Amino acid sequence: MLKPTLNQLKILQTVAEEGSIVRAADRLHLTPPTLSIQLSKLADHLGAPLYEIVGRRVELTGAGRDTIAAAQAIHQELGLLEQRLAARAGIERGRLQVAAVSTAESILPRLIGAFQNEHPGLQIRLKIVPRDELLGRIDRGDDDLYLMTRPPKREGLLIEAVGVNPLVIIAHPSHPWLTEPHHPLSDLGQQRFVSREMGSGTHYWIGQWLASRGIEFAPSLELGSNEAIKQAVMAEHGIAMISLHAVSAEVKAGQLALLQLPDVPMPTWWYAVRPTARQTTPAAQAYLDFLKQRWPELDESLLELLQARGFPTAHIKKTNAKEY
Image (cartoon, rainbow, N blue to C red):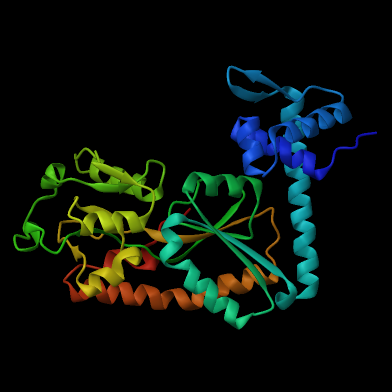
């Protein structure tokens, strides 16, 4: 009779994700020998070797891959059970888990806080992670709701636009283009760009946007957060294309300036993503309804800021959002 534990399955899944026993042990706050003992016990229970060492990397065997697939199915079933029990208890005794790409760090915390104030009995967890990690969470069904600007094109997802995400080009207030505003887009090729890291949604959008206009995207500095980008631009390291959500306060305060260029702002939008296989709990539905009610206020604030500085806005309204 098989006797694997949920903890052993979690250990194997972490080892598979990290490709290393040492890194998996560090992530799980275990010692490598303890982790290895648990993997050996799991292999003994299942009667088959689960991994092998190839070079310096741990590679799963066929039995290991089968075990991971079963572990993910068990995890999803337990998640569904938790949702059903939460639905019986109602919103105030339920739990809500939301994950979003890192660009959301300037928006979601305050929206989560406002929602929490309306439902103090609800347990809420918010994960803000890089896009690649978010895609993994979607694949595993880790969360109730996901927020991102570039949803994956795949089956089994419910995707709907919830708000605008204009990408603007920011510069130091002393940038010469602010007094000489009539520059063609081709001149961007001579500017130093500060950018998010490769793999981020913003990096992708900028690269696509510039490439479609015949401009090579070769950032001089890649950083892991919007806050770091703002600091670099304020230190006159270069210019950056970034979500207006992330810089609206600094633009209003005069710490950063918006460059007027053709086709700017670039229109992108925020999307709420839900896996169809995961039952929408009352808490998740309530939060989605809350976002639809509150997000238009954020949209209007951004559009007013752009209009006050002479930027076009009709093309970035939520009604123009792409279908997925």
